[in-house]
Image 1: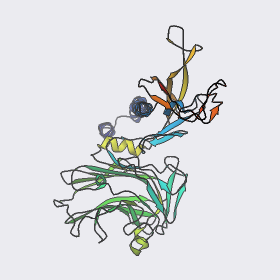
Image 2: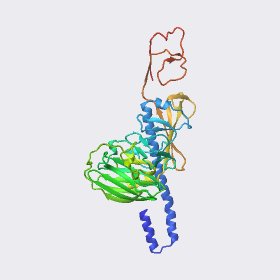
Image 3: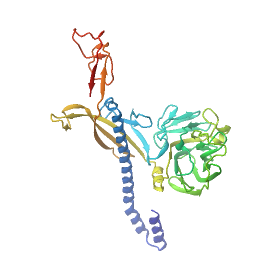
Image 4: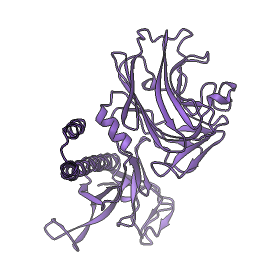
Length: 424
């Protein structure tokens, strides 16, 4: 695009007609749209493949994870992969565009209710909402969190992957500042309770807010990142390099670069492995953001990510595009004919095989799908020794109980011990 713009400027300077210029723009616009469509298609397919791979893991850990779910296209599910083992949840999962690898922390803020928000990064530890934090729907991706500016905060984990001690890291987030904000911390990772912070991204507040990055180890470094107007959504990304270089992006464009020059990352008062916090600084949780309203942010935050690698300029641009992708899956029963082959309709139901259909879409494009057949391949052993519940077990069961289907009057199931073992 920069080369194209330079060419147009040259053409104007030599008085080539405006009709020719418009013709060039008209010719390249479909190609640009096509490139964006291809990028979105690739991103959507990657998200769908990721979900399918997670479903395979989900089923391999226990086949009944799948068989316990209702079948049919009206029964949509997604997987909560921030918990171990994975958990199936009803409905559709949404995520904004951007890479999903190497995430030390990833808070989508898409729960919409409750007092915690899941970290989909490497910790899997939920962040806890304190004080005047509320769920908001006017966000980039379904829900966001609204920080009231009076000790509002989300306190995350203290895993080592969230520390910065040199090396490569990228911090990404969406912000919609309130014009009445008097300044505050968007993301803060303290070293200890003595006022030393590993890194902070701050906002000065007001109708036009100045952003800044603060880094510290044995020495400190501050980089003014540029300004954003209040009342509208903006994407911020800070890219930290092992070479000490720093790039600060606003809305996908490089705003400013710098060099921290920090070589010793050991804090002067020691590393207490304090928790990361959004919207405030230490001391946090039930406390008051170091006793200053200038430290707590007022406005909306969404989709906070911390990568343990450098994101390229094109990857930052993809994040800033803010395209919402959604994905879900549903199950279908599988029938087989007399020779054991899968048939599209009819046949005898095979309880050891399920068809998994993954839906994915973005923007207003039609839903795309991919599907796979999953078959149980591992044997399970079911042993029952207690029959005291008596007869009447007329349906299949996936857990051991004390009942059976029926018996003759000659079977003493109440006082005689015995067992049955089924391998399946």
